[in-house]
Image (cartoon, rainbow, N blue to C red):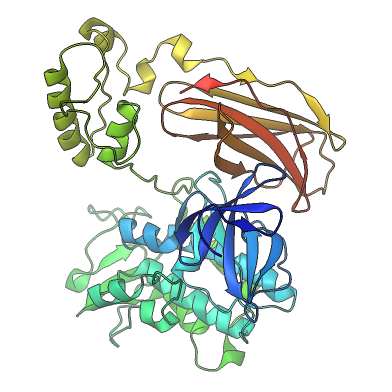
Length: 470
């Protein structure tokens, strides 16, 4: 039975449904929060290789005529949502993200497997991993070939560089039961016209500064790196190095398509050459309702506490209600306001929305750390702190031998012991491996629980940190 609170096997407990056939679950043995994806037995892979750009599979549970794959829970967004709020990406950023997708598929192909279901919905972005955020979801076991995956990479790159038509936007959404449209349904089809784009982009003054845009004949814009994104009727057409790569990936004869590893290298080289500043995902802006709920220490969706039965802090309830309405308008315009009951003099001396003007005490809040403990032959420790705006978690594991696939996991849980969120680090690269992350949960007291995995298998869990009130 698939419903919240139902057991999955003898180890997991289902949480809420996240999307399609993906649910949140809790490992009752370790307390870790995971994701679980239900697939028909014929489509569930027996084993998935470990790779930094593939969602890690921790367990495989048979559930009737289905198989439940227990994986890392990626607390981010998929590429569909990211592209929808960003629009067409700069060519260098599109190459940076797609190179990571191609690298993941190359790892699958090296084991004799193919993905077979690559689309924007199947690419997750982990905002806690700034240097390599892409995570490709688990493959299907239909009969795809590596050439099919390369064709899908070409479609994906084209999609990131060109805005889809309204009809394509509507078709690109995943249905509630988890089905996905065919790959060509989410590709804006070329109209047959192209623009040459081999000359470098120049600044408005004609100085030839690379990386800037200037008008091109016919109103087209020259993107950094010599790729032209030109509007022709309802669709956009690519040319230049990335356009040529898209066409090679989409050629009709599968044998003429490049290998995924070669695509990954070409895209990584392109991104490195045309990188203007360090790549970083555009942050998601929280909704006004969620920020106001946090300001009042409420629950998301609770609304404004301005009714007759509302319990408001201190005095002047009318002023606070008016202030909440004003804050909503300001937040909608992209301005973040923090409501406070402190005096006007304190607010002027220490404005909470400007981190640069925080007091030294708030800026350098002490970590509250749990005891060091030996677990599985390694030492574990978790710490937590807050600056009033975010909750920060830090986990340390040592020693880590060179070549060991050790990852640190931090479980954020309430002081009452309820797991809220789980974060997993990239593979450790130093003997003393420290992983830091942050979150903005509802206002209450929290602890951090440390754990580590070796080769994708959870090995040990350490003691919790002291509680910190956020």
